[in-house]
Length: 349
Image (tube, rainbow, N blue to C red; front, side, top):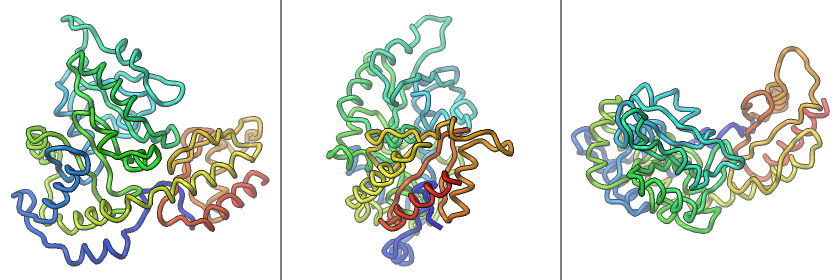
Protein backbone atom coordinates (compact mmCIF):
# COMPACT_ATOMS: atom_id res chain seq x y z
CA UNK A 1 0.00 0.00 0.00
CA UNK A 2 1.04 3.58 -0.69
CA UNK A 3 0.24 5.24 2.64
CA UNK A 4 -0.56 8.94 2.32
CA UNK A 5 -2.78 9.15 5.40
CA UNK A 6 -0.15 10.99 7.44
CA UNK A 7 3.57 11.41 8.02
CA UNK A 8 2.96 9.66 11.36
CA UNK A 9 2.97 6.31 9.53
CA UNK A 10 6.72 6.51 8.90
CA UNK A 11 8.80 3.69 10.31
CA UNK A 12 12.15 4.27 12.02
CA UNK A 13 15.12 4.39 9.67
CA UNK A 14 17.90 1.78 9.87
CA UNK A 15 20.08 4.37 11.62
CA UNK A 16 17.35 4.90 14.21
CA UNK A 17 17.01 1.17 14.84
CA UNK A 18 20.76 0.86 15.40
CA UNK A 19 20.76 3.85 17.74
CA UNK A 20 17.82 2.43 19.69
CA UNK A 21 19.53 -0.93 20.09
CA UNK A 22 22.73 0.69 21.35
CA UNK A 23 21.16 3.42 23.51
CA UNK A 24 22.58 4.15 26.92
CA UNK A 25 19.66 4.34 29.35
CA UNK A 26 18.69 5.18 32.92
CA UNK A 27 15.54 6.05 34.86
CA UNK A 28 14.23 9.27 33.34
CA UNK A 29 11.77 10.00 36.16
CA UNK A 30 14.87 10.29 38.36
CA UNK A 31 16.55 12.37 35.64
CA UNK A 32 19.13 9.64 35.04
CA UNK A 33 18.69 8.74 31.37
CA UNK A 34 21.73 10.17 29.53
CA UNK A 35 20.26 9.72 26.05
CA UNK A 36 17.13 11.67 26.99
CA UNK A 37 19.34 14.38 28.48
CA UNK A 38 21.26 14.68 25.20
CA UNK A 39 18.04 14.88 23.19
CA UNK A 40 16.57 17.54 25.46
CA UNK A 41 19.75 19.61 25.29
CA UNK A 42 19.81 19.38 21.48
CA UNK A 43 16.13 20.31 21.17
CA UNK A 44 16.58 23.34 23.42
CA UNK A 45 19.63 24.44 21.43
CA UNK A 46 17.87 24.06 18.06
CA UNK A 47 14.96 26.22 19.26
CA UNK A 48 17.12 28.74 21.10
CA UNK A 49 15.64 27.96 24.54
CA UNK A 50 17.02 27.25 27.98
CA UNK A 51 15.50 23.79 28.40
CA UNK A 52 13.33 21.07 26.88
CA UNK A 53 11.41 17.98 27.95
CA UNK A 54 10.74 14.77 26.01
CA UNK A 55 7.05 13.81 25.97
CA UNK A 56 5.34 10.76 24.44
CA UNK A 57 3.00 12.73 22.15
CA UNK A 58 2.44 16.15 20.67
CA UNK A 59 -0.95 16.32 22.33
CA UNK A 60 0.64 15.84 25.74
CA UNK A 61 3.21 18.54 25.00
CA UNK A 62 0.51 20.99 23.93
CA UNK A 63 -1.68 20.21 26.92
CA UNK A 64 1.15 20.60 29.41
CA UNK A 65 1.74 24.07 27.95
CA UNK A 66 -1.96 24.97 28.10
CA UNK A 67 -2.09 23.76 31.71
CA UNK A 68 0.89 25.86 32.76
CA UNK A 69 -0.08 29.03 30.90
CA UNK A 70 -3.72 29.16 32.06
CA UNK A 71 -5.96 28.74 35.09
CA UNK A 72 -9.32 27.07 35.52
CA UNK A 73 -12.07 29.28 34.15
CA UNK A 74 -9.96 31.07 31.56
CA UNK A 75 -9.93 31.24 27.75
CA UNK A 76 -7.49 30.27 25.00
CA UNK A 77 -7.52 32.06 21.64
CA UNK A 78 -6.91 29.72 18.71
CA UNK A 79 -7.58 29.57 14.96
CA UNK A 80 -10.86 27.75 14.37
CA UNK A 81 -9.27 24.80 12.55
CA UNK A 82 -6.36 24.50 14.98
CA UNK A 83 -5.23 21.05 16.11
CA UNK A 84 -5.42 21.81 19.83
CA UNK A 85 -9.08 22.78 19.42
CA UNK A 86 -10.20 20.12 16.94
CA UNK A 87 -8.10 17.01 17.55
CA UNK A 88 -7.09 16.93 21.20
CA UNK A 89 -10.34 15.54 22.58
CA UNK A 90 -11.38 18.61 24.55
CA UNK A 91 -8.31 18.17 26.74
CA UNK A 92 -7.94 21.86 27.53
CA UNK A 93 -11.34 21.71 29.26
CA UNK A 94 -10.96 18.21 30.71
CA UNK A 95 -7.44 18.66 32.11
CA UNK A 96 -7.08 22.39 32.66
CA UNK A 97 -10.59 23.81 32.96
CA UNK A 98 -10.06 26.27 30.10
CA UNK A 99 -12.25 27.13 27.12
CA UNK A 100 -11.23 27.79 23.52
CA UNK A 101 -12.07 31.08 21.83
CA UNK A 102 -11.85 29.98 18.17
CA UNK A 103 -11.23 32.58 15.47
CA UNK A 104 -12.37 31.73 11.94
CA UNK A 105 -10.02 32.83 9.17
CA UNK A 106 -10.31 32.63 5.36
CA UNK A 107 -6.83 31.18 4.88
CA UNK A 108 -5.61 29.76 8.19
CA UNK A 109 -3.63 32.70 9.60
CA UNK A 110 -5.09 35.02 12.22
CA UNK A 111 -4.77 38.77 11.87
CA UNK A 112 -3.40 40.78 14.82
CA UNK A 113 -6.65 42.78 14.91
CA UNK A 114 -8.64 39.55 15.26
CA UNK A 115 -6.57 38.51 18.26
CA UNK A 116 -6.90 41.95 19.80
CA UNK A 117 -10.68 41.84 19.42
CA UNK A 118 -10.92 38.35 20.95
CA UNK A 119 -9.15 39.26 24.20
CA UNK A 120 -11.77 39.78 26.89
CA UNK A 121 -11.63 43.01 28.90
CA UNK A 122 -10.26 42.63 32.42
CA UNK A 123 -13.53 42.97 34.31
CA UNK A 124 -14.96 40.71 36.99
CA UNK A 125 -17.86 39.42 34.90
CA UNK A 126 -15.86 38.28 31.83
CA UNK A 127 -13.80 35.11 31.38
CA UNK A 128 -10.11 36.08 31.52
CA UNK A 129 -8.12 35.43 28.36
CA UNK A 130 -4.73 33.97 29.27
CA UNK A 131 -3.23 32.24 26.24
CA UNK A 132 -2.82 32.54 22.49
CA UNK A 133 -2.15 29.25 20.68
CA UNK A 134 -0.58 29.29 17.21
CA UNK A 135 0.09 26.41 14.81
CA UNK A 136 2.99 26.09 12.36
CA UNK A 137 2.59 24.43 9.97
CA UNK A 138 -1.21 24.53 10.01
CA UNK A 139 -2.40 20.98 9.45
CA UNK A 140 -5.92 21.53 8.11
CA UNK A 141 -4.86 24.43 5.91
CA UNK A 142 -2.70 22.18 3.70
CA UNK A 143 0.31 22.42 6.01
CA UNK A 144 0.43 26.21 5.69
CA UNK A 145 3.70 27.68 7.04
CA UNK A 146 3.47 30.90 9.05
CA UNK A 147 6.25 33.44 8.74
CA UNK A 148 8.30 34.71 11.64
CA UNK A 149 6.98 38.20 10.91
CA UNK A 150 3.36 37.15 11.36
CA UNK A 151 4.17 35.18 14.51
CA UNK A 152 5.96 38.23 15.89
CA UNK A 153 2.97 40.49 15.16
CA UNK A 154 0.49 38.11 16.81
CA UNK A 155 2.72 37.52 19.82
CA UNK A 156 3.17 41.27 20.28
CA UNK A 157 -0.59 41.73 20.60
CA UNK A 158 -0.82 38.90 23.13
CA UNK A 159 2.14 40.05 25.20
CA UNK A 160 0.84 43.64 25.38
CA UNK A 161 -2.24 42.21 27.09
CA UNK A 162 -0.20 39.94 29.40
CA UNK A 163 -1.15 36.74 27.53
CA UNK A 164 1.28 33.90 27.03
CA UNK A 165 1.88 32.47 23.55
CA UNK A 166 2.25 28.74 22.86
CA UNK A 167 3.24 27.41 19.45
CA UNK A 168 1.99 24.02 18.32
CA UNK A 169 5.00 23.51 16.08
CA UNK A 170 4.37 19.84 15.36
CA UNK A 171 5.83 20.37 11.87
CA UNK A 172 7.86 23.52 12.51
CA UNK A 173 10.86 22.05 10.69
CA UNK A 174 8.69 21.68 7.58
CA UNK A 175 7.75 25.34 7.96
CA UNK A 176 11.39 26.35 8.29
CA UNK A 177 12.34 24.36 5.19
CA UNK A 178 9.52 25.90 3.16
CA UNK A 179 10.31 29.46 4.25
CA UNK A 180 14.10 29.18 4.01
CA UNK A 181 14.69 29.94 7.68
CA UNK A 182 15.20 28.09 10.97
CA UNK A 183 12.82 26.66 13.55
CA UNK A 184 14.55 28.90 16.10
CA UNK A 185 13.63 32.02 14.14
CA UNK A 186 10.02 30.93 13.58
CA UNK A 187 9.52 30.26 17.29
CA UNK A 188 11.51 33.20 18.67
CA UNK A 189 8.53 35.22 19.95
CA UNK A 190 6.60 32.38 21.60
CA UNK A 191 6.79 31.52 25.29
CA UNK A 192 6.72 27.77 24.69
CA UNK A 193 6.95 25.50 21.66
CA UNK A 194 6.07 21.87 21.02
CA UNK A 195 7.47 20.03 18.01
CA UNK A 196 7.12 16.40 16.92
CA UNK A 197 9.84 13.90 16.20
CA UNK A 198 7.37 11.27 14.98
CA UNK A 199 5.98 12.96 11.86
CA UNK A 200 8.19 14.06 8.97
CA UNK A 201 11.31 13.42 11.05
CA UNK A 202 10.32 9.73 11.16
CA UNK A 203 11.05 8.82 14.79
CA UNK A 204 8.69 6.11 16.06
CA UNK A 205 7.52 8.02 19.14
CA UNK A 206 7.89 11.36 20.83
CA UNK A 207 7.71 15.12 20.84
CA UNK A 208 9.63 17.92 22.52
CA UNK A 209 8.34 20.80 24.62
CA UNK A 210 10.76 23.70 24.98
CA UNK A 211 10.78 26.88 27.05
CA UNK A 212 12.68 28.60 29.82
CA UNK A 213 14.13 26.63 32.72
CA UNK A 214 11.36 27.37 35.23
CA UNK A 215 8.68 26.44 32.71
CA UNK A 216 10.31 23.09 31.95
CA UNK A 217 10.77 22.31 35.65
CA UNK A 218 7.01 22.70 36.08
CA UNK A 219 6.38 20.85 32.82
CA UNK A 220 8.21 17.83 34.26
CA UNK A 221 5.81 17.80 37.22
CA UNK A 222 2.71 18.16 35.01
CA UNK A 223 3.97 15.45 32.63
CA UNK A 224 3.93 13.07 35.60
CA UNK A 225 0.43 14.23 36.60
CA UNK A 226 -0.76 13.49 33.06
CA UNK A 227 0.75 9.99 33.16
CA UNK A 228 3.77 10.78 31.01
CA UNK A 229 6.58 9.87 33.37
CA UNK A 230 8.82 7.33 31.60
CA UNK A 231 11.66 5.15 32.77
CA UNK A 232 14.41 3.74 30.47
CA UNK A 233 13.11 5.86 27.61
CA UNK A 234 16.53 6.45 26.09
CA UNK A 235 15.71 3.68 23.60
CA UNK A 236 13.15 6.10 22.11
CA UNK A 237 15.14 9.28 22.64
CA UNK A 238 17.97 7.72 20.61
CA UNK A 239 15.69 7.69 17.56
CA UNK A 240 14.82 11.32 18.27
CA UNK A 241 18.50 12.26 18.16
CA UNK A 242 18.81 10.67 14.73
CA UNK A 243 15.61 12.47 13.65
CA UNK A 244 17.02 15.88 14.57
CA UNK A 245 20.49 15.30 13.15
CA UNK A 246 19.73 13.36 9.96
CA UNK A 247 16.11 13.91 8.88
CA UNK A 248 15.57 17.68 8.95
CA UNK A 249 17.61 18.55 5.87
CA UNK A 250 15.72 16.09 3.63
CA UNK A 251 12.25 17.60 4.26
CA UNK A 252 12.30 19.64 1.00
CA UNK A 253 12.09 16.29 -0.85
CA UNK A 254 8.70 15.69 0.74
CA UNK A 255 7.60 19.20 -0.22
CA UNK A 256 8.61 18.69 -3.84
CA UNK A 257 6.60 15.47 -4.05
CA UNK A 258 3.61 17.16 -2.43
CA UNK A 259 3.79 19.87 -5.12
CA UNK A 260 3.82 17.24 -7.87
CA UNK A 261 0.85 15.51 -6.24
CA UNK A 262 -0.95 18.84 -5.98
CA UNK A 263 -0.36 19.73 -9.62
CA UNK A 264 -1.73 16.39 -10.78
CA UNK A 265 -4.79 16.48 -8.55
CA UNK A 266 -5.60 20.08 -9.51
CA UNK A 267 -5.96 18.98 -13.14
CA UNK A 268 -8.93 16.73 -12.27
CA UNK A 269 -12.33 18.40 -12.80
CA UNK A 270 -13.89 16.77 -9.72
CA UNK A 271 -11.24 18.23 -7.40
CA UNK A 272 -11.17 21.79 -6.08
CA UNK A 273 -7.54 22.56 -5.26
CA UNK A 274 -5.48 25.74 -5.61
CA UNK A 275 -1.91 24.58 -6.37
CA UNK A 276 -0.46 27.64 -4.63
CA UNK A 277 -2.05 26.59 -1.34
CA UNK A 278 0.40 23.70 -0.85
CA UNK A 279 3.84 24.75 0.37
CA UNK A 280 4.93 21.85 2.57
CA UNK A 281 4.06 18.13 2.73
CA UNK A 282 0.28 18.24 3.34
CA UNK A 283 -2.25 18.31 0.51
CA UNK A 284 -5.85 19.06 1.51
CA UNK A 285 -8.46 19.32 -1.23
CA UNK A 286 -12.23 19.39 -1.66
CA UNK A 287 -14.31 17.21 -3.94
CA UNK A 288 -16.79 19.22 -6.01
CA UNK A 289 -20.31 18.18 -4.90
CA UNK A 290 -21.76 18.32 -8.43
CA UNK A 291 -19.52 15.42 -9.45
CA UNK A 292 -20.82 13.13 -6.69
CA UNK A 293 -24.52 12.22 -6.86
CA UNK A 294 -25.87 10.67 -3.66
CA UNK A 295 -25.19 6.94 -3.41
CA UNK A 296 -25.25 4.28 -0.68
CA UNK A 297 -25.44 6.88 2.09
CA UNK A 298 -21.65 7.33 1.99
CA UNK A 299 -20.28 10.88 1.72
CA UNK A 300 -18.15 11.70 -1.34
CA UNK A 301 -14.91 11.90 0.65
CA UNK A 302 -15.58 8.49 2.18
CA UNK A 303 -16.34 7.01 -1.24
CA UNK A 304 -13.18 8.51 -2.73
CA UNK A 305 -11.01 7.19 0.12
CA UNK A 306 -12.59 3.73 -0.19
CA UNK A 307 -11.98 3.70 -3.94
CA UNK A 308 -8.37 4.75 -3.50
CA UNK A 309 -7.82 1.98 -0.96
CA UNK A 310 -9.07 -0.61 -3.45
CA UNK A 311 -6.35 0.61 -5.81
CA UNK A 312 -3.62 0.42 -3.17
CA UNK A 313 -3.50 4.02 -1.93
CA UNK A 314 -4.41 5.12 1.59
CA UNK A 315 -5.57 8.68 2.31
CA UNK A 316 -7.90 10.35 4.81
CA UNK A 317 -11.36 11.91 4.72
CA UNK A 318 -12.15 15.05 6.70
CA UNK A 319 -15.89 15.62 6.71
CA UNK A 320 -18.08 14.96 3.70
CA UNK A 321 -16.01 16.51 0.91
CA UNK A 322 -12.48 17.12 2.16
CA UNK A 323 -9.55 14.73 1.66
CA UNK A 324 -5.99 14.89 2.97
CA UNK A 325 -2.81 13.32 1.59
CA UNK A 326 0.60 13.68 3.26
CA UNK A 327 4.02 12.95 1.81
CA UNK A 328 6.94 11.61 3.86
CA UNK A 329 10.28 9.88 3.49
CA UNK A 330 8.73 6.51 2.55
CA UNK A 331 6.94 8.08 -0.45
CA UNK A 332 9.06 8.27 -3.59
CA UNK A 333 8.39 9.73 -7.04
CA UNK A 334 6.88 6.49 -8.29
CA UNK A 335 4.41 6.42 -5.40
CA UNK A 336 3.22 9.90 -6.33
CA UNK A 337 2.56 8.90 -9.93
CA UNK A 338 0.76 5.75 -8.78
CA UNK A 339 -1.40 7.81 -6.40
CA UNK A 340 -2.34 10.18 -9.22
CA UNK A 341 -3.25 7.27 -11.48
CA UNK A 342 -5.39 5.84 -8.70
CA UNK A 343 -7.13 9.20 -8.20
CA UNK A 344 -7.94 9.43 -11.90
CA UNK A 345 -9.31 5.89 -11.94
CA UNK A 346 -11.33 6.37 -8.76
CA UNK A 347 -12.96 9.55 -9.99
CA UNK A 348 -13.66 8.02 -13.39
CA UNK A 349 -15.47 5.17 -11.67
